[in-house]
Amino acid sequence: ATLSVLIESESLLNDGIAYALFLSILDVVAKTDSPTMPMIVGTVIYSSVVGIVVGVVAGVICLRLMAHIWNDSAMEVCLAISLVWGVFLIGDALHASGVLAVVAYGLTFASQSSSYLSPGVQHTMKEVWHLLEYIANTLVFVYSGVVCAYGLYSYELDLLHTGSVLLIYVLLNVIRFIVVLVLYPALQRLGYG
Image (tube, rainbow, N blue to C red; front, side, top):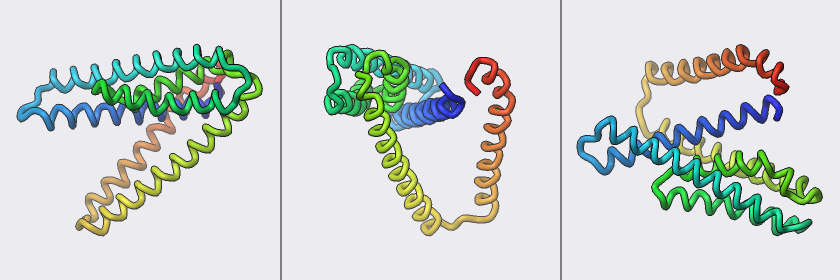
């Protein structure tokens, strides 16, 4: 794996964990008048662990099913994509993190797919996932822009809050740069740079 793949994976995992934390805390706060820290921690642990287990199990099942399909790109791509949606729904139905389930499924699938995918299908699978990634990113950023624009025009924002948000943004990027800079030599020695 290249450094860019590691950074993208780290980013996905961070986003998945943040979303799982948010939904778990929201769930506890919405259901209880006086949530306690053990309730919140228990919910977060359950949501994360069950979501990851569901994703790994689904990834292994998908790979085992693909071992029985040979050179049928439509079938292999459809199986991989439909299981993504199914994994999310199963995780969500179990009151676990569907997002972490999908991330775990993706990491499991990607780590072993070259052994199970038909050689002629690997390129098609990559192209389909790149297209879906592009569409999803576009939708996320358009939606985020609409929500931010609505928020900016709906509420009075003062200079202090705007400056704080910009400062946090800059600091987060500086921290991420420092972490990558510090870990880059070690990653190069491990073959990821």
